[in-house]
Length: 103
Image 1 (cartoon, rainbow, N blue to C red):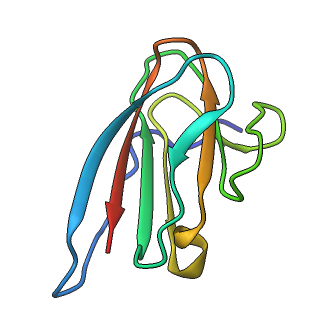
Image 2 (cartoon, rainbow, N blue to C red; image 1 turned 120 degrees about the horizontal axis):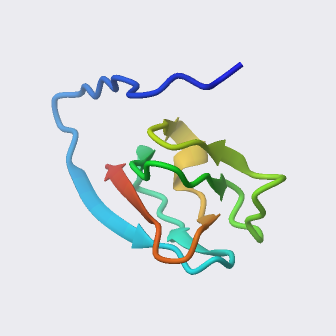
Image 3 (cartoon, helix red, strand yellow; image 1 turned 90 degrees about the vertical axis):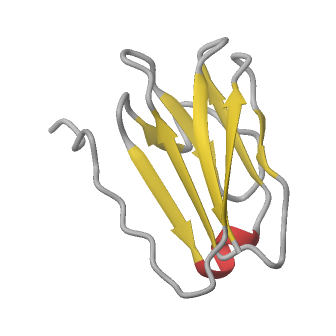
């Protein structure tokens, strides 16, 4: 079964502050976000038309076959204590992930 595409995301909170970043991948495991004990959420979007990416929310070496997969057009949100961890990513060289972090 294909994953849903074009997911709608709802962010709420009276004091939420979001920061947007673009992470360009190299084809090898790399940093998605550094650890941050003040972070409340991490939202990652794969806007690529035809390239799969993966993230490792534990900060270990990201691998396409063992991470959280992000198909083209897919978005994942990590909240709470899990969002405070360092995270890594892997995907096609020059592919870009959009990352929103909230504190």
